[in-house]
Length: 219
Ligand code: E4P
Image 1 (tube, rainbow, N blue to C red):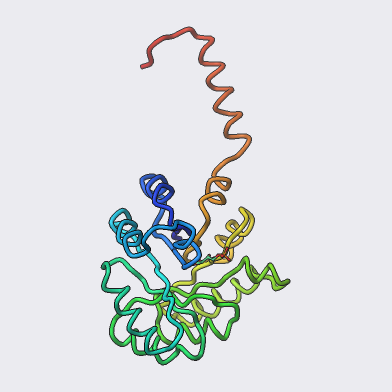
Image 2: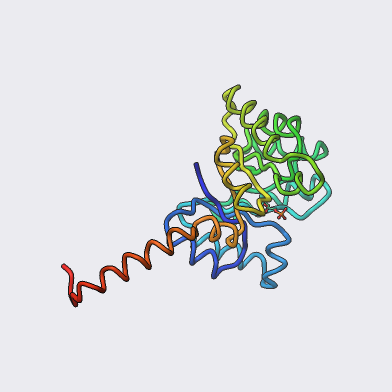
C-alpha cells in the first residue's frame, strides 16, 4: 500500500519525502492557493523533490475544451505529474480523450460507487474517493471505500483506489484495513498516526535504565 501526503507545502514535502515512507503527493487548488506562491513554479519544485513518486495536480478550467488543453499543459510540466480531473459526466469525453493520449489521470471528487466504476472504465491511474467529505454529510466514507475497493479489485480494473480527504488517524487506519491501494493524508494526520504514548514512554524507560550502567561509550 502506498502513502501520499496531501499538501503543496515545500518544507513539509521535503521533510516527509526524505523519510522514504512517502510514495507521492496530492495537491489541489486549495493547497496551492494556501501557499500563495506562483503555482507553476511551486509544482515544478515539488516534482523535482519527488523524483520517483507521482505528483497529482488539478485542472482549474471549467469548460471541457479549455480543461483538455490545460490538462495537456499540466501533464507536460514534468514526467511524474498525474492530472486531477473532477469525475463529472461533463468531463467524461475529455477523460477518455486524455486517457487515449496516454495522459495519466487522477479522477477526483468521487463520492459514489457509480463514479468510481466510470473512472475505472477509463483506466484512470487513480480513483480518489473523498472519505472525509462523505463523513461530513453523514455518508459512511469508509463503508463506501470498502465497496469501491471490492468492485475495482474484484473486477480486476487496473485503476488504483486512493482514499482521500482524510482528517483523522482512525480514517487512515480504516483506509488501510479496507484495502485502499493508496491513502493520501495531511501531514498532521500522518505525524499523529506515527506517535504512540507507549513508544515515547518506552524510549524514556530504556534511556533511564541504560544511564544506570554509567557507560560513556557503547559499543
Ligand atoms: C485529494 O486528493 C484532495 O486533495 C484532498 O484529500 C481533499 O481533502 P479535503 O476534503 O480535506 O479538502
